[in-house]
Image 1 (cartoon, helix red, strand yellow):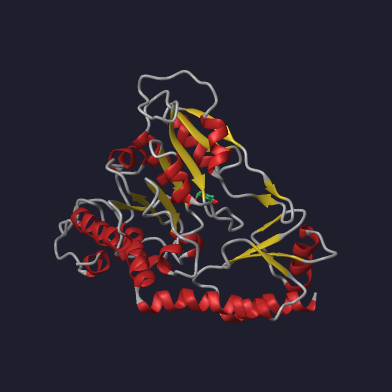
Image 2 (cartoon, rainbow, N blue to C red):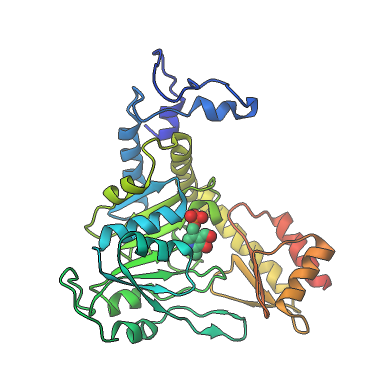
Length: 355
Ligand SMILES: Cc1ncc(COP(=O)(O)O)c(C=O)c1O
């Protein structure tokens, strides 16, 4: 039975349990639906068992060893991954400008961060992808061998890569894995949750890296802050997740994850992703005065001759009320997701054509 179906099956018992609202309207009338499905893990329908089965079904869809549903964002998946594959004192290779959760994870695990820097793609003003040689420079640095580390890569126990980057730059995860086969590879794919569902998008890391973390809420239509942690090695991340997560998970959010993946994996969902890509492709081709960049077409990375990235961003906002996701001196990025309609795209591209 799906988690949604389980939640819809109303309890006939009189529950003297948490949550105190008893699945009825209590404070905010508009949240009525939400209350109805907000049960506790001790509910008589055994939602924990339903969750285990739902995670197994989703893991089969992705072809992973295990996929965990996260209701505290990719942040929690990144922290749990590092806690799972390291011991106190290990060294973890992280990008100096990564999302704060990477360094926080390393600190919480009692590990030592070894930072790598990424060159800037000058034509776009954004960080380049991660190349094995960039990591090799740091891995080869002389450092004390630690007893707890069984990595052949000196003392580096785990490597964290962000791919795609915010701006849609993708790294070759396969070659990084092949270059460092004995270090645990954690891929922050927070911005790439659509990748497993279209071969027109870059390759996902879910079947390559040891741990891949994806935010469903960023591009895949999920509710804030739903996310997934895919485990592709023999380690079990459950203990680490239990350590950092509440013991009262939100079943409405967990059920929404199951529904979200079922949709992405359905014919309709895949078609919707392909439609988004087609729409962007066709509108791009009618926009000759703008230069497009990046590896992921759904992150519309643009620049225009004669305008800085900041000026382009300002014009879009001031003249057309269009807000971008990220801007630098040279370029501007407008983020799209499964819910980005043709109408919305048309508005953006007609504004770009008028500029
Ligand atoms: C690259 C990257 N990784 C991880 C995260 C954390 O994701 P979440 O908000 O799902 O916890 C973010 C959030 O902005 C991000 O940009």
